[in-house]
Image 1 (cartoon, one colour):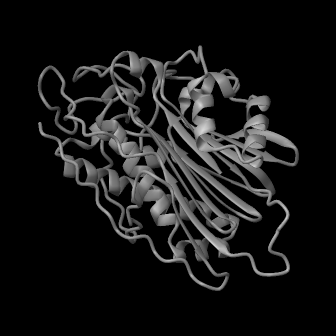
Image 2 (image 1 turned 60 degrees about the horizontal axis):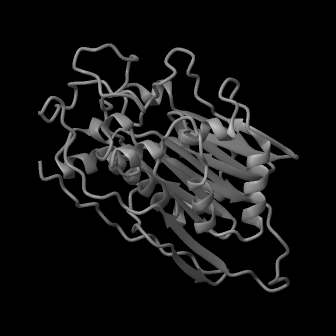
Length: 349
């Protein structure tokens, strides 16, 4: 696997940081990957929403109990599994907003998740992420958001009714590779009119992963993309699922546990509107656009916190940021549960 996130040219020109985040985990033949795009209208604080959502998903999915249940899951279980992860991610984002002392809308973020094991892959998202999958020699996009009504708007994890309107899943079998991307790459890797994948990009990228290309090489490739027509942050995770020859055979292959994520954002002040910190429901949020004044029209349902918190068991066990962590266990040993960790950076405003 390989992942990278680079700051968009518009953000750099305005002295802003990257609002995207990504994370992925590998445990033997099990893979989890996630990308998130913090709302450009609340840049800075939204980066924390994207980061917290990604950390929540990967730390929950890398637990031994979750992995065992996913291996035993049937395709019909995909919706419930993903719903649990997404609701847990929303809880983490809400908690992070409370810790920072800002309204949850200031951490608005999309969320795009993939789970895979031999014979089964499940994808889910809220928002406008890009998912490409390779199977049976064909590359297809999955769960592309319909933007026919509002081209510059999207749903966020904490948008009102997002779980009823935007949450969607897809189950696939027989995949050999997949990719998750934020929408900053849309003009380079898809036909934006039809949503179809640009095959040469994905074929070349997956081949590079198979050949052992590093994350640094991938980040350099993303930084080198010019004229992307958005100036937005660019983030992608690539996964290759077709296993190469097993050098350990006939001995048992050791189970390798690997977790990788984008680094934590820098501390950001509370988002302000006309010099005042907005209340939770004081404004709608439009993705990658301008912050709208209170009372201005926006796509229905955007920018408000979900009314009810999830009642399911808490999946959270925050994985640490920064450099990859790697542990190796024997084939019969159960991987340890991730340590619980809270984000504690707090706004000074």
